[in-house]
Image (cartoon, rainbow, N blue to C red; front, side, top):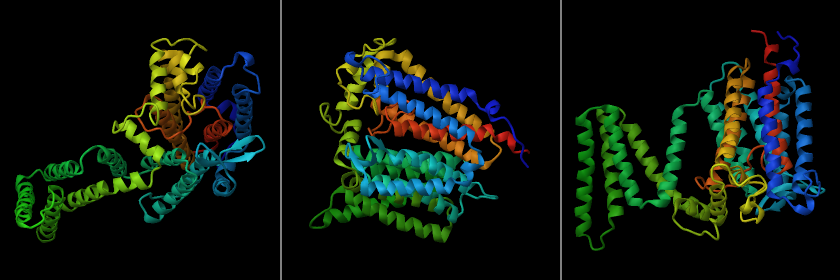
Length: 474
């Protein structure tokens, strides 16, 4: 049963005000980045700030249209929106324009449309509709398969466009799935995999394998809290290592300790499996699987790093990890960004007074690295205000998502919060040099019509869904 309400009275104006504040601040920063004394008017449509103003007006109009349309429209057409957006993604592979080595744009006259920006909200709608069924259980294989298809199919197409940053954003949806009942072990595995990835690039392989072996035995003891099985397991491994080491000493062409260790580990694992089968020791199977998977994973890192990632991505990761230093090459953007932010001090240099900005030391200042302009001209105080606004928006979205009466609205709300959280944390992290540079925009701040419109649609659909929540009677 439903009832009609006045949506304009039910709109969460707090969220709308934060949105408008962020858009306005972004526009002012774009003006500061590309300011030209010969084109000093902020409404000069030949300059980026003038064009951004037009896109802001269009975004506000789009937001109003979204609020006027019945909320059931988004539920009913969720799959259709998703299908159309994916077809647009595929078409980019054939008719797309290449910008900064990524073939991700469709030219429409003088305007460039980036479909990957819009698939984020259509994927969120499709995911919300799929989960919005009676007695939905996320751990069923069929559900996991279709959820994976909804999320990873567009991500795979975006990777083919050589737009890694936009593809990585889909990792954010795991936070939504966790809220809907996905095992927290998935997040733990993802976090451990990320640590292993970077550790395998920095540490010596044998040192890493020894660490993983030690960790496995510690986990084995902590899970059983018994000394006897722990000592037996450790003795089996030490004995295997000693035997293999002695055999290796007496052969004609001895292997390095690295291979000796791995062979001993394999023998010990086989013995442990036999013990598990005969004695049924608790938690042993899980520990063996953990050790096998993590060790195997470390061997795949080099292949992925050198054969899947591009040269520029390898250089950026090496620069981040300190494996190599190239302040005039791969590390130039981040190095100049940190200089710009650091030079702002506590209060900043003042609006339009950023020297790093004025002399174009930081590439992509109005798009991916726009936050460094905030740090330089507004200082620590201004940067804190911007981050606080984003944090307030994210917390508000989570609050709104939790008060929804429909599963569809709740899931979509968490999708919005997760996507924005990922974009903000990665973008700001890039400018500070604490995460690799993957080239994603700062929501509502970065220059560009596709980005602004896509984030506006993403947010305002949820504002519309929230405004109609009282139409559903308990």
